[in-house]
Length: 193
Ligand code: IMP
View 1: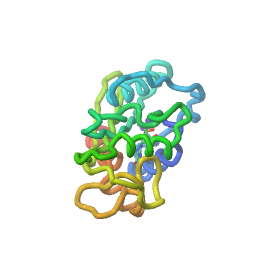
View 2 (view 1 turned 135 degrees about the vertical axis):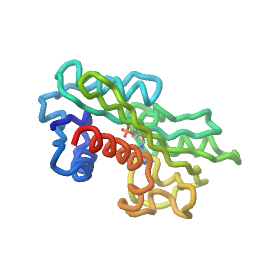
View 3 (view 1 turned 180 degrees about the horizontal axis):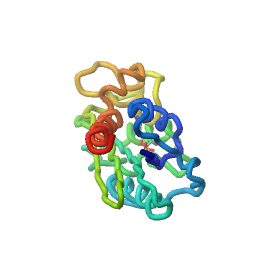
View 4 (view 1 turned 120 degrees about the vertical axis):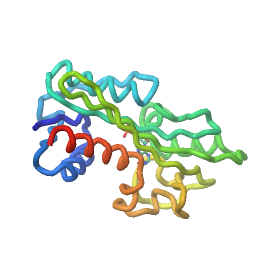
């Protein structure tokens, strides 16, 4: 069986292919000659993930899935949420995004936050969604240099280090994306492998 992953991130694609084994072949957007930018104009992670999977399914008539992730900070009413990549501007500057969160939380005691990933899978025209989340808190300052995005300011619950101080394999075991991917893979193996 073949399945498109609607992402341009080849690292994510390889990771999922390794987890799925060889019964399900994951294709990239390039593999199906989809070279255009897929719109992401939804106001929720769920809507954005569906927008991307539906874009590919309706144009290319091939089963596919897409993901969308956001950091949700309770004291900021769930911001940056669906706008996580562009929180401080269109250039997707991770440093500026972190500084914006830290500034907005300056003096704020409640630092609870979570990362949430939603995967939208379309199989023969039917949509299925899988969610993964990791609860945690926003640190007062950056710590660590691994990872990407908001990793240096996010400390997952039950750990004394930030995501940016963890090894990738350890982060993947407990992360939002890792958890959503496990649900997707369990579903695919059960229903289609
Ligand atoms: P995407 O939907 O996977 O492209 O993620 C959207 C944005 O959320 C990214 O540009 C990052 O700013 C942030 N983000 C997603 N996953 C992570 C993560 O694992 N650590 C830190 N930031 C993340």
